[in-house]
Length: 374
Image (cartoon, rainbow, N blue to C red; front, side):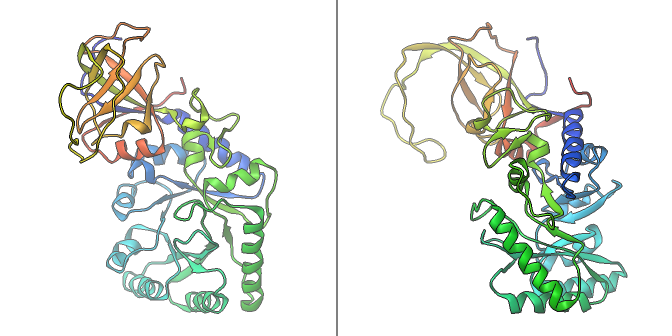
């Protein structure tokens, strides 16, 4: 295993990420679908954004202005993946080419600021088809038409497209019935306003399961995708997608070996598995339960809950079992490990989406980038 330095660290395989993005673009192009690449899990890393640009994605989306600022040097369009707050209007126009929006107060403010900056700004107008997050409720047709009509008339604004979202707040799974209803609504708007939207954005990576099943509405020509190329997983039916780099572990764990957490062993010891004394709560005011398995060989690792929750990662070595965590330590059982782990050596973990999000947000976690596909 060898000795390592500066752990914990996160290893990101850019070559595999680029491959996945390229394959994703090719598959969706067969259905006439353009991909907007969502980079938000990486906390605005330009390296990961560039990888999917290399794979053929031309628009990068982030949910925070601070992350869009990190990408200004990249040759691509930039999208703010949520409606900006009114306090962010200036920076939105300055750092984003387009933004998701549906509120007229915000749209008017964007127009006013775009005029001030003498810069064009595009809108992806959002309709809520049931997930209960952003967008005008799909049954409020009069409000939708009024919003589209005014947005079309405001100076320095143009409509990039009209979109909807699924599988976020309300956890609504996109169905072909949802998409058909969305398309029918959009076509009614187009007929009334005598205007055709360039893009109908039909959701995120969960909408891909309809393509995976061979069911699609051809008017949907745009998706905002991150998880598919990041993990190679079709998330509704929880299946790996052929041709994508992905984990070799059970897909239901939703892990990826494109992102490896490497942590150093601080100490190896043999101890009981039951605490001695009266139990209270931990530092997070949580009670724990313990199973008495006798004295076991264990190891203390150099990351903790502040870095990533142990439920969002798994050791690559299946003979290791995670016991639990404190703020800055993770405890593992190595009694039955096939390798004789020692202090100073490293243990490697695969992570899921939530774990990757947490690790990328930690500035103290060193990030190493791997360019090849091996």
